[in-house]
Length: 111
Length: 113
Image (cartoon, rainbow over the protein chains, first blue to last red):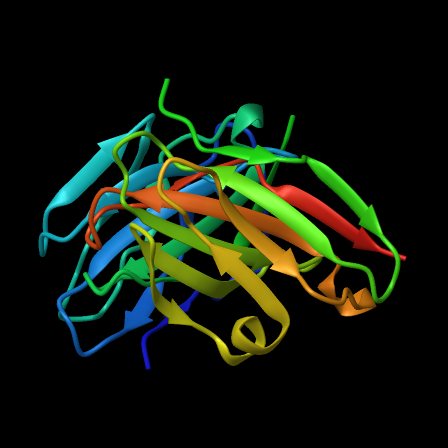
């Protein structure tokens, strides 16, 4: 079945440093990939989305490129801020009205 | 602002009691999802609807939950007999099509004592 793997459960960084959160997926269908961010006691909010191979998508300083050859959609930012501390979820849609989520990565940014 | 409205925000029930939560999807979104987010923050898909019709649901939902999305009324998810393991954040989301990223509500946090 369809699945999403996020390898890091927790990432801790000092502000100003770059970050990459890993996301790989498995599906036999044409994939739609999403990154969501969830702050404490808030709704998950869409950060990025893509279904186009090898095209970089950006929003709020975060960026990701869907690589179908390696089934990956890693999230990156060149300089993290304190306000980026949150849970980040990678999710996979296949157009079949079901979206599968990864286990999430908690990003903690320290001063 | 686009919004999915979930009520109540918090729900406390005893074991064996019914627990009902509601969701008003974003206007114009025919697809509605329910997810359970556990204390480890993992998402479990429960059920989805297109308009009033159930598209998919997991076995647990079919056996222990009652869910509907009537026209012109909020969607609802009800646990028929709450168990301690049902304590979680229940998230409702909606989307325009099966290809779009779901828009989430803030959730109903259920505590089963």
